[in-house]
Image 1 (cartoon, one colour):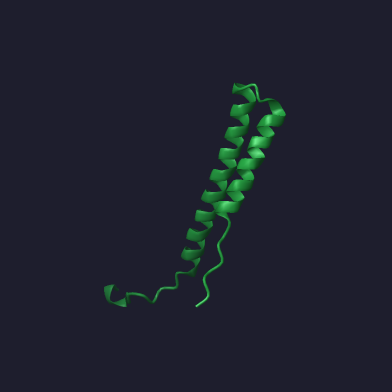
Image 2: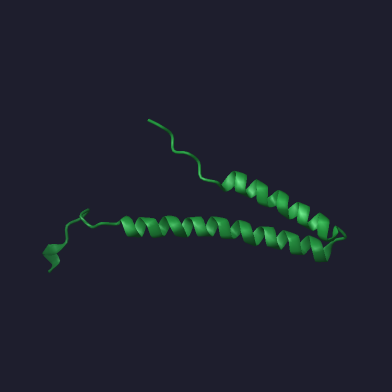
Length: 76
């Protein structure tokens, strides 16, 4: 039984795909929560109003999408 294990022979494609998906969900989910939090905070705690809150939230969303998007892999 213990002799059946051989290091490095296990197929880990599913585990790697799950890890990658979790990282992406965390990244984009954090952006969504921060945009929503900014919108609600500005809407209810300042005199910015709906339009001001929406503009700030859209700016944060655009910046987040710009900085969090996938970078192309460098060609070798």
